[in-house]
Length: 66
Image (cartoon, rainbow, N blue to C red):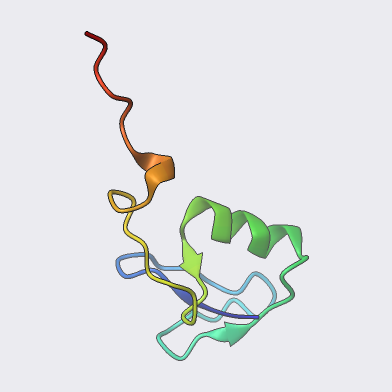
């Protein structure tokens, strides 16, 4: 799987200590370090659909109770 850093984030490869740029790097998706960086939103798959948190129903605010 290829990952790139999210704009505004400075992420380094924990093995090589190189900064991940727009070209990205190939990583093992089962590696806990990369899984955590993906889950935290520090890196992303450049081929995945770009959903903004506001557009994702999982991030929608609950409807007000009447």
